[in-house]
Structures are given as C-alpha cells and as structure tokens.
Length: 118
Image 1: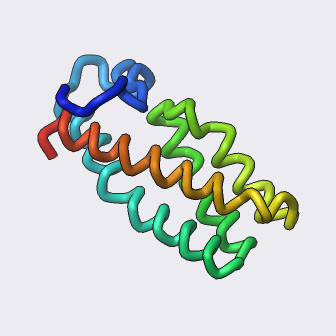
Image 2: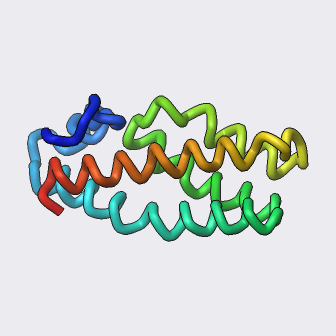
C-alpha cells in the first residue's frame, strides 16, 4: 500500500461476517466510501453553522460506520461530538474534534479506495 502510515481501519469484523467472500468485503468498502462523505460534510457544515443539534444527529449517523470499520482513533471523538451537540457542552473545542474526525475519515476513505481499487 503506497499510502503512508498504517491502515486507519480494521476490517476484521467485516471479514468475519464475509466468511471469505471478497465481493462482500468490496461492497462494504464501496458503501462506506460512497455514503460517509455526504454525512461527514453535513456534520462539518452543521458545526460551522453552530447548529449543534443537527451536528449531533449527523455524528450519530457516522458512529455505526466508524464502529463497523473499527476506526478506533476517532471512536471516542464521534461520541464526544454527538454528546456535545445534544447537551450543548464543550462547544468551544467541538470544531477541532470535528476537523480531526473529518481528516481521519478522509484518509480512511483514500486507503479503502486504494485497497479495493475503487
């Protein structure tokens, strides 16, 4: 893999579900690559517009994707963004967390595109 650094995701859960079905693995990767960017963009836009409740909702929508792909580096971050938005807390640091989530997700998407030739 020519992308620098280790993979940001762990497909072991999906591999277990796939039971050796490489087409299924690729389908999951394709779904992630196509479905995550619009939700991520919506979360970022809501954060920029200080629409905290909507941001929390978008974070909630991303949470299962992050968990399924085992992107552990932002597992706690996505939960913090959801909680902060719902409860209106730590909103001063939330944009920084949202940026970190965006950066990691975009890198993971690029890695998946390369790994699965998408």
